[in-house]
Length: 245
Image (cartoon, helix red, strand yellow):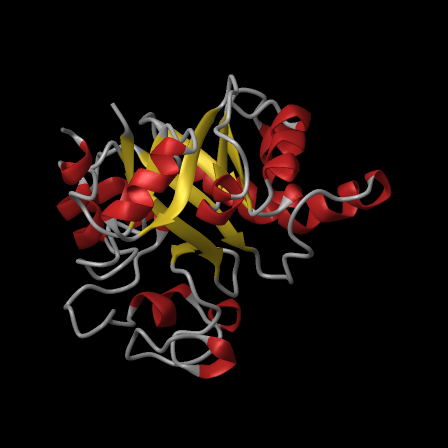
């Protein structure tokens, strides 16, 4: 049975990364994925873009403005998402008000996150230090539920592994070779490759779980499964309905 991970709480049908989205997705997915970034004082908040408004290449999905990294937690969590009545939550609040298994993507610390992907050995310590404060704050507030931590950034993976040798990790990648390298380096049992990464290869045989992103249509779901996906990180529920026969 293919596992379904609700991307930002099934962002195609809910106000993404909100408590309401997680609750709505809970009975339609095996796990709910969400993005965590740091606001000015380091508090982890559940949000994707760099800005609350449309500046800086962001999508303008809230009624707030300003760069999240420059704002207080109160300013960030007052922002309403897409006129939905749902506001941007802190990670603490979301954990307290939901109980489903989660995939927490470590998206952005207060400082610039650095380059994605695998790093030269000489750069790894500095990258880990860049991420350590946010990672420590995230780990401090995690509860006992089933939680998978993922990131595009080696510094984030290294910071998790330095703090917790047993935490479930998943490197996110657009190249399967990079994903496998990082999974081996940080003892990650899961890899999150893009759909294009698995489309460009023969069906994968691996002892690690492959959750493929971001799946938006039933035929993308079919392609990912044919390429060896164990799970689909999907914007919509029900995408595998047409494949069950």
